[in-house]
Image (cartoon, rainbow, N blue to C red; front, top):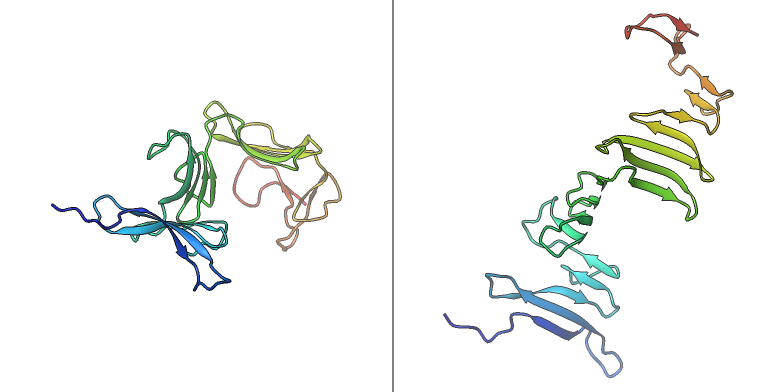
Length: 212
């Protein structure tokens, strides 16, 4: 089998425009040849304006990544940050799939944003740079019970827990109204004659002991 003398990879500085004495714009192109192939293709480009394109020759931002293979599907990862250089990182820290799903702590996010952690009380925290004012974390020994908190000035006022105490301590609470006039205000929004607004019963059927 003979070997070709043609280029199989490299980088080239090329003209980005028709050159004149006063205008000589350039771009930088990086090419490689796939294993099992013989033809090189451009993989990375740095444009005359400094934009970096991976998988695209027309990057529209400072860094643009485009998934080019025809066989690529929605679950292919187009960008990842991991704790190793292996094909599948020992721990995936951050990933973006071809369908736009973003994963933190997972290589296969199943939603637009998925955070995966096995650490208790670890998850999503939102702050103003000084105080956390909202958080959504996992609790329990297996980290599979949700806990949502809202804080005001660093002091917790709302807690909704899947396996613990839940409470609202930030002001009046309204059900069926956006202007509750007392600690708990319930307003009928379903119409009807003498509708039940509050119900305590040992049955789940309708027409039980109710209060209007």
